[in-house]
Image (cartoon, rainbow, N blue to C red; front, side, top):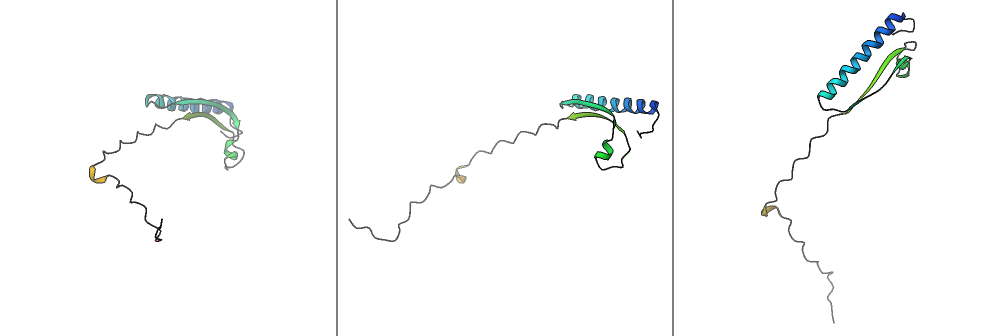
Length: 100
């Protein structure tokens, strides 16, 4: 809401943002995602803090939502006898003949 918004608009906007955060949290819970409300602020000029025009007192409700867990990695395929690593070659000589 703008800084000069009437109190009824501020209250209505604050409630609407709170309902939106609550709906997002309910959907996250239904999907098995973790979530946590992190607060609400009135008259916080976050628009200006984020590079927008100053003078907008944004009403913010914060909700942290977790991403779904990564799927497990597929198991490695079994090794076939033709794909085995060959034994290392014996060391090569230095080219000099050894004498007792």
